[in-house]
Length: 177
Image (cartoon, rainbow, N blue to C red; front, side, top):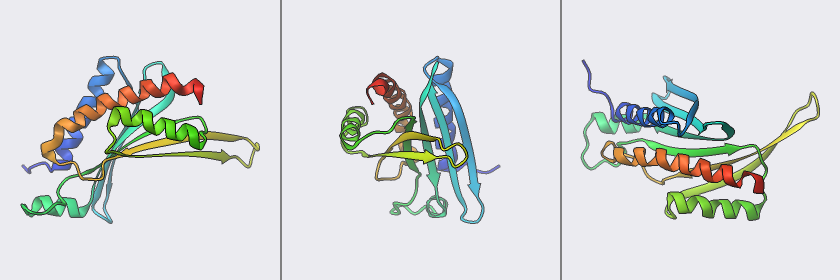
């Protein structure tokens, strides 16, 4: 039997917390990806949710570990800061925002996630050649500027609460954008 890596342990805790939200009726899981890239020996786990009966806004949390993260953990280097996983939270909804709305959104997300987080907002329009139609959508991402370590597992649990809070805020603002 082998010892699971920190990535595996964090993935299991994160997945359990998200599915607990679904069991409590606070979220609906809409997608899940568990990827291993054999050429770079990296891992990615992403799980996407929406509010029940509100599929307009979606949120996903992405957990990533590179070969450097794994090697640092397996070689048990006490002073190495590469041990852990990168975490990014994304919010996506069908709407195009201008700069003023994006600044307001960043402020709203900062009240939930904290001012020390890195929050980016981008709006995109996709055009279809076939019908000449287009679709607008906005993506907001929250990153932490650091690796999350196994000792910070409680942070992952809090992030799932913040994801639901952020989705509720976005759904309430959806008509304003």
